[in-house]
Image (spheres, rainbow, N blue to C red):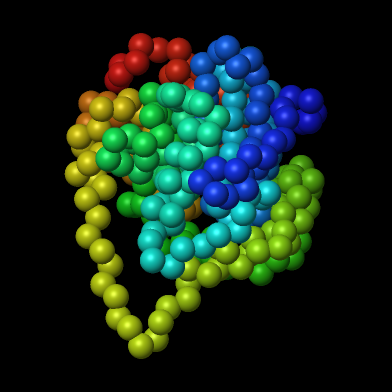
Length: 282
């Protein structure tokens, strides 16, 4: 992808240096892209095949979350990975003066969007949401959780991880090389590994989570995109969530975990079709 399709910029959001990509006409509707949570991910690696296409009809903003890419490497031990990153993106869109926007997320990014849209006060001011392979937490397979976490930086590990999330590594040599290089950015691997540390002298119960109850009451329209060959989520997860609320709809396509990488043209078609429809339509 030609870098002329976007500009890489940096701002301070919530006190944290935040790198982001911007593309498209600022007078057009804003679409915020939230990347996945895999080792070595950056905004480019997750969205590079979509930004140029989506920027024809949208003003694109693609921030890098705390811990990834050029954003500060910060980890919290007293809150969930979702709760730690919600205020950061809230500060990001506020700093840029985005009063409301549509949001598109992949995997962890999709889950983060769903969490944000049901958080008190809809802090990101999400108009419509699209989550690709992001359930918000439920329906993740334990085998997938363990496979994603099994990463010690090397080209071999980057290839294995890419195959897991993209469904294939055919023709993806540059992607694999870049993922490996990204995973060597100072503090990145450490930030993602740090939450595994547990105090051996303290037992802590898993806190109660009313996420599904809040999702059932959502007022924000959202499309859930699932891959029929996804090895990381239970089959049917999107339909189960969509059954909670008339604001939620689901579609399953022939893809693995991240169709934004595997079949970007189809994802662009789905995104454009959904955002072009009447808000709130099932």
